[in-house]
Length: 152
Image (cartoon, rainbow, N blue to C red; front, side):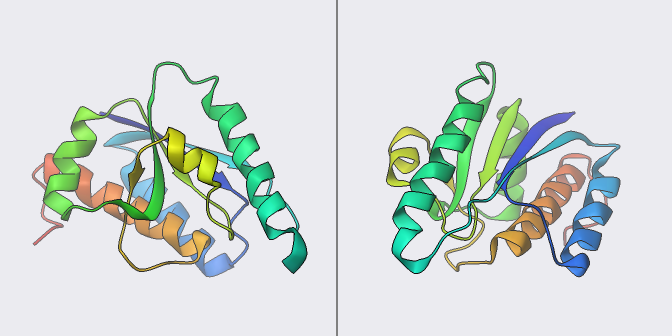
């Protein structure tokens, strides 16, 4: 069984995204232990973007520093890309795993220097949508590993 923590900055505010995320979490129950950890987003002005990003980075680092057993990856467009079947077999070998979804500002450079990153796409997604896409891809991976008819 997959053992994955999804660490995020902020909550899903859009009800349609929240509904989809809940649906994939429900579908994943037979295949994976998924723990959602939401850290509070930092309010920022245009002048304070870098400072806010660094502060969110510190919050992420504070959480990750206490997780000694898990493998950790940031989800970022500049990360490692792979097709869904390869992702499934990659996930199977990386448990327990923490996947970090940044907030609206992305990640601080300090986090990029410390942790490897994984990409859902070379495209940039709003962080709420990235969470839904991530959950769908984990579900797809679980069905591939379980040889269920979902991925064609």
